[in-house]
Length: 257
Image (cartoon, rainbow, N blue to C red; front, side, top):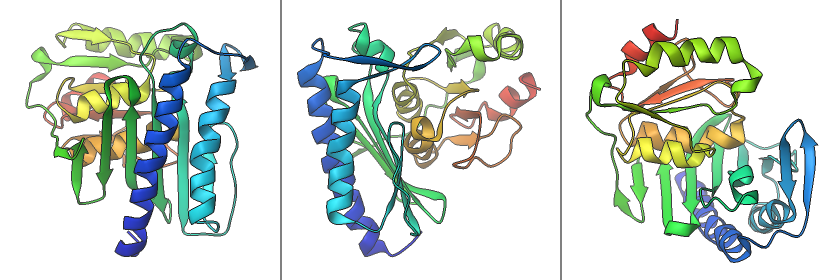
């Protein structure tokens, strides 16, 4: 896990940087100046980049030797500490004035995620989790639900176009078993809901590490269970995952085989 004093300092900076970036997102909501295409239906705005600069500048100022993996611009260093940053998760929502978006900052030590921070600025919700220290929302402990699969809210990957056959098969196997299904277009929103017991399950096939690193630690530290789609341990190189309240995890794995 690394030195606890060093981790404590990094947590303080992560919390402050997430708030600062989130404030920018909220202040600029509805006032985008520039949108650029990064590929097939993948966009970045001037506000993504401005929020990223806020976070990266804080990291570089305080921890110049740390590496940074970011959705927009990474910074490689020889270091045991690796920051994983998504300045705006839910960019497409943001572009269309849908107010489901947030900032995600995670920290890995020797490639194990040990700290995760998510800030949802519209609702002033600051989530954080530290390895073996629990999960919190605005300083209050949170935990996953105890609902069974028939009562479960399933959050499913919205990028169906990438693996239509596989994903639609998985959805078909799950949808009649759970109570309902949601797609938010924001990983941090979905995983924070699982962690605080508002939903029971999120299944993703195509997320990137900056989308999920903070949120998956949050779910685990809130008492949930996270694996890859085959039931193996998740990590920063995972390509898909199941995050659940734990109670329904084994059944979900069997339905996705």
